[in-house]
Length: 129
Figure 1 (cartoon, rainbow, N blue to C red):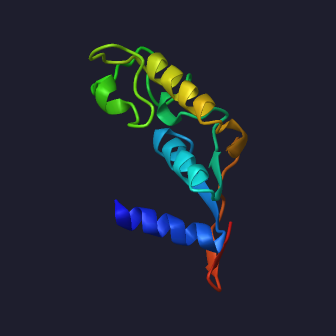
Figure 2 (cartoon, rainbow, N blue to C red):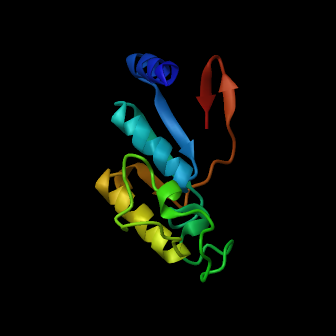
């Protein structure tokens, strides 16, 4: 954990801009962490909604899906579930949780929807995206 903090602090000191590919649960958590570290970060997602496979009408998962991992493990440690006790969320319930997470940490303005990364090339130590 201390190595991660040191790495984030070194990046912050260098004023790096961060581009996060995807705004599913992992992309949202990465965006929140980068923003909290004071870094300039944006998440992009080709879809018109954040949430990845959990977004409504994602076309990847069926709408009546239930998670097989409980809310106690699906919720982020810094944003616990409002449900009392163990619950297996539906896809819609988990997406609602992600919406609350995005709003709580004020992430919406840092998410670019309908945007995809076509190329990424490293040139002289900088990424051209």
